[in-house]
Amino acid sequence: VNAKLNDIVTRAFNETWALHESKGVAMRLASYGLAVQRVAEATVTRGIYP
Image (cartoon, rainbow, N blue to C red; front, side, top):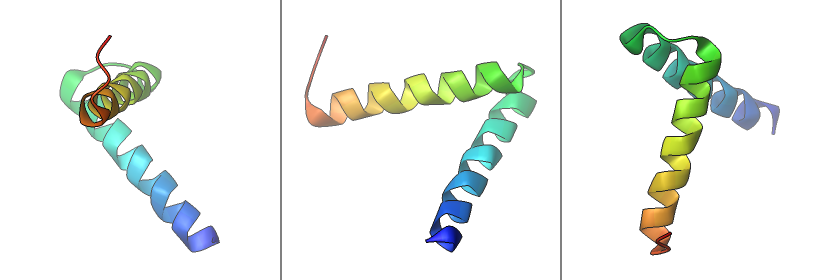
């Protein structure tokens, strides 16, 4: 369980860091942007449109 959690947290950090570096935004804003993007993708995938 801990290894799986470590993989998830590490992947999330790496994605956030990459966005932080590429866009030059704060880590908090980068993580928020990724979260919004994931929700948008899930909404489209599930077929729920606002």
